[in-house]
Length: 289
Image (tube, rainbow, N blue to C red; front, side, top):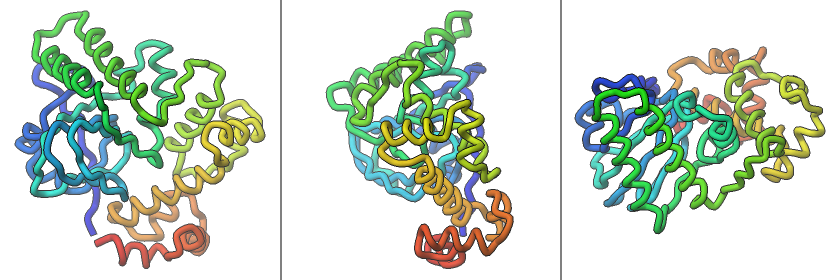
């Protein structure tokens, strides 16, 4: 069973900005082995596929790489490139703090489906906007190669935000309203809290209290925005995290259970089997090779 590696943030030379972009060929030179192993990043990444075809793995899904497509990867997701790469792409990485310089950008980041929800995999054809996005990637690369100035961070931030706005507009799941009291913002805040506290096994009542809303308000917001309950999403999110740990965590099943807030191993095993049809041991044996 392979274990996932934590990938550090690679700065551009002579730059301390928390944004960077490289050609896939450059990354393969810098990390000839790590990219082909399961690896988890603690920042956001964007893959812009230019030409050729291939396969890219993220969590438990396989992406069939196609030209002029774009893929968004959220923090903590587990990625893996497949050998015999037969495509060209550009990869950008950035942190939430680098993007969120204004209230509009902060709200965009909290509301967009491009990031923050590992149960959603944003991968789509950019269509007529591909060339525009590709040029913005190149602008960022060129700016990072220039000597540092006080205005450079603002320039880079604007280029990045333009890429995200274009992608959001093209995405079929786009529902950004920029309404600071929207149900969508509440749903995103809930998901963010869950992602940060998944190991605590908190109840929905706890999360609604933290968000300063009633449980009914949270439930109604979820039903309107996603046509599911927060409980359903929370269960699916927990199952994903368990699968990640079973396949890549490199720790025992009992350690996984306790790390995710289960007080009894039997409860952990029962929960997982009810939702997947397999015990944790069976899942690890079947898929964790």
